[in-house]
Length: 150
Image (cartoon, rainbow, N blue to C red; front, top):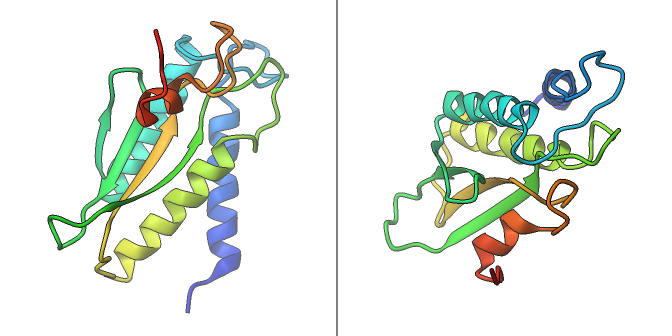
């Protein structure tokens, strides 16, 4: 049986690590606008966690971080879990990262318990949900879903 208290503490430690990465040099506020050095640094941190978990990891053309847990059934459909890593200016630490990191916790537990899923599982950390820097929201998810119209 999983130890939910330690899993929760692990997720919260990761959230604190990610929250420490900000465009604000004083560290007083959290700001990671899409494409900034702080955003890239945060995404690299999370990418390391994806890779350590054993996910097949890649960045797509718009900069979404994508981690895949392949099913033993090659032709299986894909189930997607997604949230975002970019922030508004002076953001809260849970908006976006909590969804990504809870998804990662789920994937880690599936891998640790050696569960063979009947579908592929893809965890996506979208690159530009907030739209703060370029004034267009949901850019990363629009590209993934085919809704982006340049």
